[in-house]
Length: 291
Image: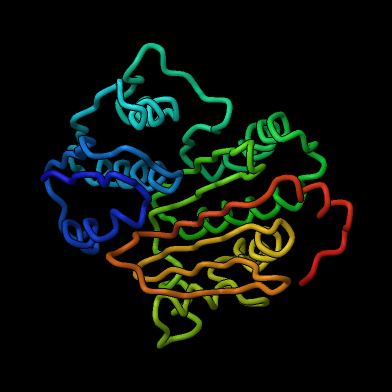
């Protein structure tokens, strides 16, 4: 089986092919080849989703291959520098491959290691490049820790990845964290039945909602992530799971939440966030967050 990656590769652009070829992962091919011949540009979500999907298929006994890897093309170079091929092929494609200063390379999420990676790798890297001291990132650290906790609680296989990219001209950070687990709609359905996938995701971001599926899953929740990324850092938050998605941003002083149906199927849960790092100072100094 051959899956051709799209020219402008975001995770959502592969959801239709996932549903078409794999459905609910009940039957998988013996071999699959991801064709890179068309790909010219990719976002962090594409890096993370392709990594998770490749790892999941391999764990299920499917032989995963990559074709048309021209190391002279910028998109392939970007993916190589992001450590994608080193993780999945055992070594980088090019001897000149190296981590770019504006990216925090692809990282597989292991529950026992994620919080140390956050504290000792991601935050110091971000501090060095955007000039915001780590001590001003307490709220960001708590937000991301909560996402990692949710992955640990809801992913039996432990499959998850994170990738971050810093845009210095705009002073923006884009982070994508995703897992291949049971997904938010399945978790919410234990508490509230009859919701569409997008409605279930929107509910998961409401103040006070908790699935309490495990004793460890009773933290500050996704609402806290929304309040900080969107309200306090003037960012955009997107969450995709199963057949639904929600985009959350700010219009004026109001938080806008837009649920929608995705084309295809998103296994597990994907969270994309993009926000202004120059507001980390302001949020910390105010010390009074809007709930």
